Length: 395
Length: 244
Image 1 (tube, one colour):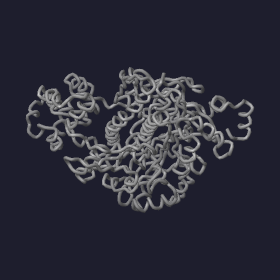
Image 2 (cartoon, each protein chain N blue to C red):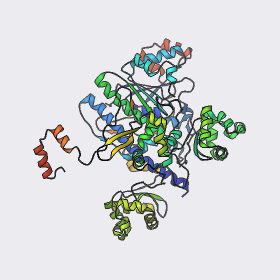
Image 3 (tube, chains in turn green, purple):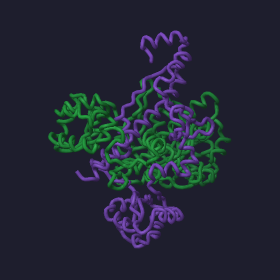
Image 4 (tube, rainbow over the protein chains, first blue to last red):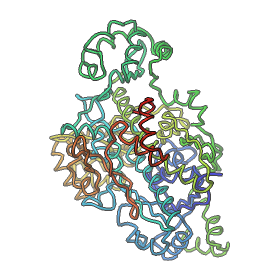
């Protein structure tokens, strides 16, 4: 059994934010029907290289546990079929620019009329309200406007984007939360509602302590490279042969760290006696530690620091990540069978539930792979009807 | 190690905080949903490392299919180009140019010749030939201010945007209109401001109605309301130093 067994999701979303949202719902047992346009479907099916036998690696990474149907939403018959699916669905997820679905007759009000119990989740760059609602929202633009890029990179270098499309991904996660919250609310009231998620809101919510620092001081925090604003040493250091991380978060760890380094005199040095002092004097402290840590290879430091109870870690390439015994033990890399490719490797389910765990039941779908199955199972259509729709270019 | 590499490390570090915050929040409703059906609780086991791996998105499949180890890319996108920050006259501006915008973009920056250049004919080619494309656009970007770029690009429907500092984010009209800067009265420190809830529910919206608590502020309240302990018992617990 899975927590979302029996929950039906009509997924009109494409690219990353919406598909990441429905990916989580699918992992937890929801039946996710990915509704795609017949001319190529989700844009990311064409994104690459790399392609594996013509299938986009990008697409494959975020579309497992979903069924794909094709539907031409510009045709009246296509709209009717979508309406029929929505009447049966619990959740709709979309990430078009605000207003796009209204024009097609599937805005929130219209769909709510059609099915008051349906939860309608919209994910957009700037949200469905406010003066900039109409602007297209791309991850990099939101990372810039939300202040995240101003905080990332070195102080004397240009602003840097986080190495992943983190605004899209965070919005997808908040979408999941919103949908689950609305499902809880529906259990109590029987009524659905609109979940309005903006990439911009999501990133601002992630500003957390950086926002707190700004509200307290009125000063925009500047980017600090690898430094943490309020803890040090909590950053990478260069060993003899490469980089590794050290995270000395309190005075107890500081004392241990100094002992492991054989620099016990630093413990009683008043310039470094407390966390606040170490941050204040980090420009003095950093070179001392750099010199000390340069003396051995990274693996050796990791071993000694671990033994000494000092939090530390490697800075892995992806090849190293997937070789990690811990990553394997947690089933965070999985191989699933694929109809065209044999098998594909995907990342595992990060939410581990003891009684109703997530599962990867199906590979990322081929375009329209489940059109017939869904039209038959959900709407009771006959093979002849489906053939007719295909002839008319509706599916 | 090159500067590029260390920059990406910075980005990854920033991501850790992000992943943890998001992941922890993401769990609560999931448990709730399952419990409503079975009446039984369960254990939710979240590893920070799992969350990071799950966030790797298509980096994993890029690696496992090609054997190529995705490296740091600075501020650019792995499979779309140009999709990154450029230095304008007075600061940085982001251009996010997908296939539908490429032609308009070239016209606006006055480089229609790029449309004929076979190295840049498709998005896949532009991503592949990023090293040749980037300096061309970087040169063009320097000719106008951030504000000027945003005005002409937006008019033409080419996605673009500034890189805001935190003070500019907080003052942003869209951020304000979405209620993303919440103010709350804290008896100790007066009015404090916090990021609002990004989950906008139409019927049952979230609220920010309590500041961060002082240490143990609600110990007595909770023992009384949840466990029905009387004042006397609570005092006794204090004396035994079970609570403070």
